[in-house]
Amino acid sequence: MDQVTKPAGFWIRLLGNLLDGIIVSIPLGLIGFLITGDFDGEDPITSLIGFIYAVAVPILWYGYTIGKRIVGVRIVKVNGKKLGIGAMLLRVLVAGIVYGLTLGIALIVSVFMVVFRKDKRSLHDMMAGTYVTYSKPGEIEDKQAFVD
Image 1 (cartoon, rainbow, N blue to C red):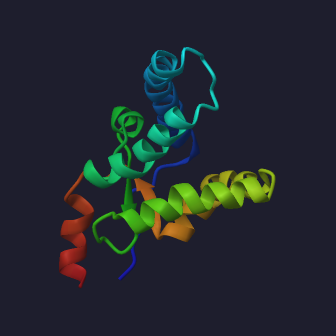
Image 2: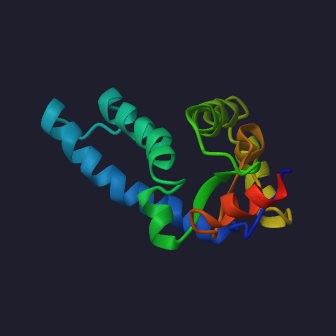
């Protein structure tokens, strides 16, 4: 049974993303500078590391990134199953392509979805079968075990 528990809204998600941007991009910029000798924000090495961070860290850390952990929210699957590579690739890669192809219009639609939908799910959440929640690891999964 698909169920959304304690969904996180727009402002807390934005703050988590901003913290991730600051905490991750500064060290990545320094690493890129040490490797290339230039502070080019479009360096493929730092872009790849940033992508790997966005996909792998939530899989390995119960849906948290550093920024999300600080603000107390995490990414989970709607069906209560473990977050995996497929869901995170849909969330990060496919959603990024859709947002780029629509010149940001889909991103604006996503913002409105998070603000106005009861379950606070965006387009990339819908694509990946995920949502962002205040629930701690084990809370949602434990409830799903009793439902199934």
